[in-house]
Amino acid sequence: MPMWIVSVLSLWAAYWAAMFAQIAHLRAIDDGVGAVVFSWISRAFLAVGFGLFVVAKSG
Image 1 (cartoon, rainbow, N blue to C red):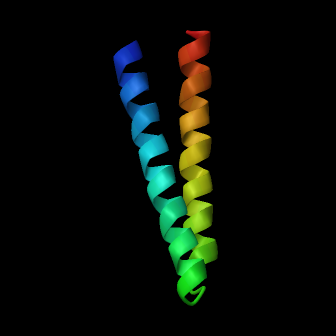
Image 2: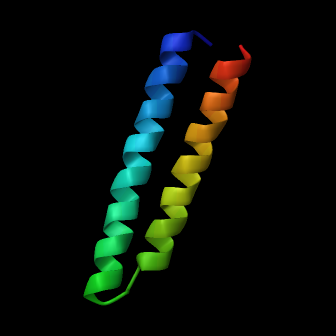
Image 3: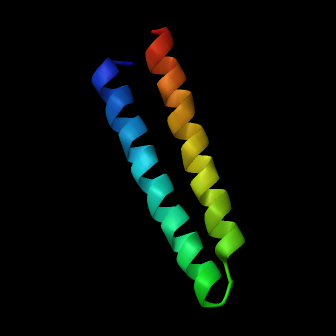
């Protein structure tokens, strides 16, 4: 996989992780409904971003 694709995908994953973390935070402040689900989604995007970072560093 070309390095620029890995970079774009890892930045995309980091962007969406931040967006879902912000939504989880706002939901927790508001009424708490769905906050845990949004934090899980954010964690999944962070894991994908970290995996892409490891792939980029090793290759």
